Image (cartoon, rainbow, N blue to C red):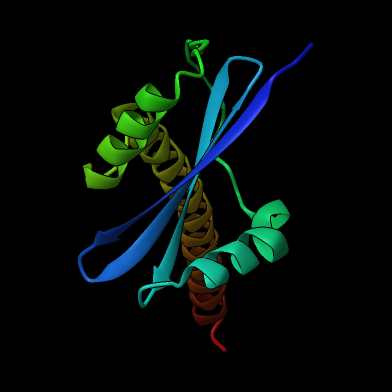
Amino acid sequence: MDKVSGKLTVFFEEPFWVGVFERVSDGKLSVCKVTFGAEPKDYEVYDFVLKNYYRLRFSPAVVTNVKETGRNPKRVQREVRKQVQNTGIGTKSQQDLKLQQEQLKTERKTVSREQRELEQQRKFELKQQKRKEKHRGR
């Protein structure tokens, strides 16, 4: 049976409030970063998750080890308190977000390079055409 788990961490990253969605499916972690702007209320976050979760663009999945945890209530309470006090996101998630950012950056670079080369080719052909017309004496 496949186990899927999700986690949302909301924190303040100067100057905006940011949410990081982490999704673990089949032992693979993928994340998505969302900027909220002003501090979101609980009901606003809940409403955002309900309406926009399926539109989120998650990063490519990265293999991670999934731990099976016991349900000791005191331990769970300690972990929740530690997560609330902890500012920032897990290093694995940061690496995953950085990977997604770099992939989008390379896509943009290739598209802009192709456009630039097409523009240079067009200018070159126009220049060649003008030179032929001048050579013919027009």
